[in-house]
Image 1 (cartoon, rainbow, N blue to C red):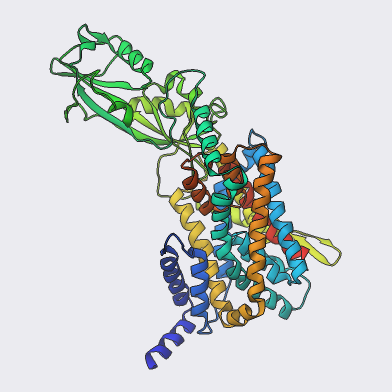
Image 2 (cartoon, helix red, strand yellow):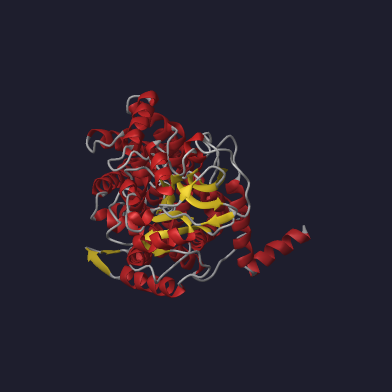
Length: 569
């Protein structure tokens, strides 16, 4: 008992200890799964924080707000390029849908809160949990702090927000995935019909107006370099490199001859170089086409010297206006893409299928694979070579958050109610703007993906940990206060907007089923639902509807944390 008392007192004297204890144990519990079910990291950190908070620990200073602002800036920075370009590009239809879906989420939650008689804190927590937008805990807390009510009233409302969030979040996550992966296809004609339409759409997007080449149109296929001995009858008479590659193309294989061993000498191929029986050649291209049938060349050989050459894989951010707006097929047709494979497309952290008709956007990061000379010839034509680096531009991060906070604290008054973005809303907007500017001018403001992950996850969960610890003493009484009714209210607020969204996407926006479900997952910013939909349909196609709507939904739902507070005062 003395040891426990010593530990409790040590935690009270050193608040950093319980915070990191909450982070460590919360992340561990959040990683656990049982039959596919997981609490998730944020909810786990909150609940562990509540448990740790029973030690009655006071955490001084603005630590939680500092980390929350870091999280919001990272979110804005990540989705900024897609957000602004979608507003004036071909994605405007998906933008409008995301706005409609977010408005449904807001007004359904507000209506339920009014009917149930919930106070400001309960409404904000209901919205945050049911729509699985954890950042609203912070945005709602900031907004409550600006209201012209007593300090005691503010504290009561702020303390109940994480309680209501925890009650509603579990169904918000599980329910969203179930609705979109299972009920969604039923609402669109049944899973068989939706799968058939998805397969048909994939086929349409694979059709090329420029070439019959089917290579590089399936997402994330590995690119290979293989060596073969030339023994087939096709080479009874010597064939030029260009003739061989044209023959491969006519067979539906976009493959390139990268190296030749002839007469014991290793040669870099030229279009008119003759290949004869007894030579060895290295082919590059999509793996399944290289190994599909060796009879037209000869057996594969393990020639270490022949395969010892500088192949390179580099990420390139699309910034050139001549490339943004092209389809994958049109890009492949460019002369500078000879010998270069597109391994993957990353759009705002989400992998986009590399279909022939996938339209490229500025800010997309393409992973190019090929010989070093070929890749480095193509890359500057596309944009900025975003080579991995360890350092982050903390000047941008620091000053960006300052600017966002200063804009956020500006307010106007509607009657006696001050209305402002708050420091959190202003920081989110600053992140959006600076993320977009970086995609336009990529030589400044680089934040590596790994650093963004840390800012995002540690920033939010450090904030949530402090919320859990400080609200711990009142959490149990809060659960008793909100009751089981709030859980049922959360089910309504999660389900109704999504089901209406599926219907609106189908009837009004005329989205194809796979795109429709992806748009619903993105507009509600539920990555778990995207994974469930893709697994249900057996296709990565829903990601085509996810990226733009996610950028819009993530921004609007966070800002709606301000609105839900002001609407229920």
